[in-house]
Image: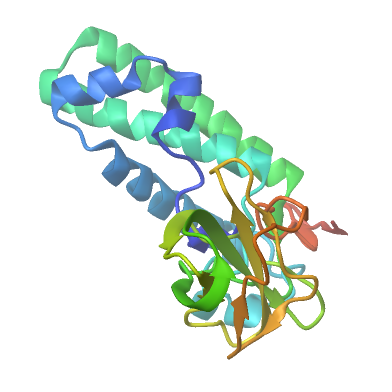
Length: 255
């Protein structure tokens, strides 16, 4: 996924690092989703600073970096960890400021240090950039038309694809129930300018969603589920992988 697609982590991810974090947040009246978004904003500002001030000679689009921000930055596993640890530091920063509690202060120090180390690892490994970034798709428009399929509840995702095959992150999972004697119709919403087609993923459960389009549906067209059986395609991906990596030094390497 791209850094602009949304928060790299959610509340479940945070519990991997700190199992009691939701209890702490509830006790102190802290909105975890707000802190996840704040951490994303703060990390984004730092990434832009790195790309502007430390890598001018190797960032391939440094001349327009202020304009595009982090819209081409890919969330690597290193950056995902950085975001999680920074979010925990932000939460404990609020918790400590609320109570001036020594335990919260120790947690704040711990996660600030871990976040700092995770940032350094991210920069050392390299900030991943997509040369032709495809944003995450919005939830597709779902409807039904006359057909022969019984009433069915479907789970649906979609993703935009470029002319050269780059696929963006899939949309959030959504559901749609068709009436009897009908067929589901899927249409993309607000395609990005560099998208040429839409991949459609459908399943009968939330964990069985698979690709249904043999080739991407051209932008502006819709996809009608052809019959009662679903194609056994691949599962949705997580978005683009980096094409190149920019480090905090003077190194540019291909992904």
